[in-house]
Image 1: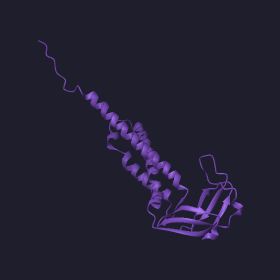
Image 2: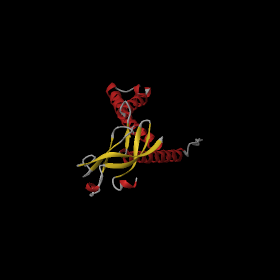
Image 3: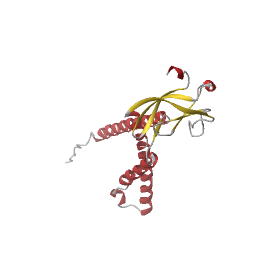
Image 4: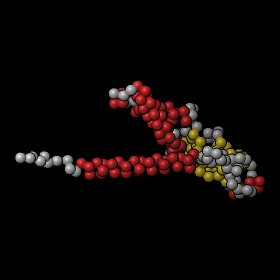
Amino acid sequence: MKYELKSWNTNIPHEDKRKKLILKTIIFILFGFFMLHVLFFIKISQRIIVSLPIPDILISLVFAVFIAFIFSFRRKLLINKPIRKRVTQYCNRFYGITCLCFIIILPLFDYYVYFFPKETNTYLTYYEITTPGPRIGRFSNCNKGIKIHDQYTSDIFFLCFNDKKHSDYNIQALVTVQSNSIGSYLVNYNLSRLNQY
């Protein structure tokens, strides 16, 4: 007499597919948020000056290395693997986590200046038209740029400048700046018709 064992796990492949689909959807959504985060940072970064005693890039790098050091060395990877493979895995994980954390942490200072201003001021300041302008990619620059002096951080906003009539303008620009304890955000600037103010 043959006994047929009934399998109670007939729906496991279907559950695995559903879990994989949910995981892929979550990863896709997180990647979308990450790309929006990077694009928004690129859009606002030229109009923001972060003024800290220690450069924000150095602070971001230290935090990224610290977080990567915590998360890249797990005990599970130590067991039953050759030393060379272990070291390679550690280095790859450490490098990947450091880069990801650095890209996530670096814009946080700019976001703080942008989203949490303490005051908004309008004032006259000096500017300079330069050729070439700031970098707009890895291998290219704007044809012309404008350097606007900021009163609060004593630093310079460096933006692309496309107006061809700049010789008619005054030597000062009327700027509107939002500032807080760590930096300034250039809301707007006007080079002409300053006699209205």
